[in-house]
Image 1 (cartoon, one colour):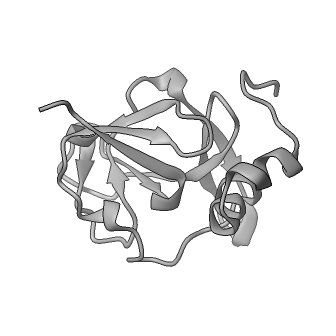
Image 2: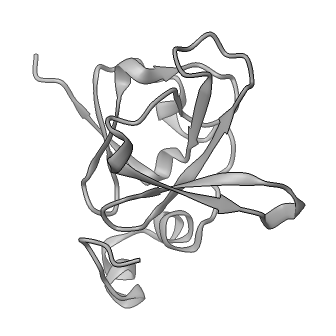
Length: 135
């Protein structure tokens, strides 16, 4: 798929830390409970750390006690790309930034969380940047 923001691996490596590159460009996963965003209650917008696309709002974030920031919905359906992921011997749905194709995490359904969508967008904190609302 062609993305609005396309760069070579070398260009991404200049802009991202090694951990960010591993997660965002190689579909890695950060250690659970390592992101301060998991429990951060600051009102604002979460952007893609790679390209700055606005992806999630803090008012859709909830504490899923899963080790990663969890949201019940992206800002809009066209902000993220969902891709079937059959790695690790199971069916999952990968979440990518629709603007640059960076790996964000996975979305799960039917887990019984008391949210409007019954979805959990389990997102690597290292793939996000929080832009607090103006006071």
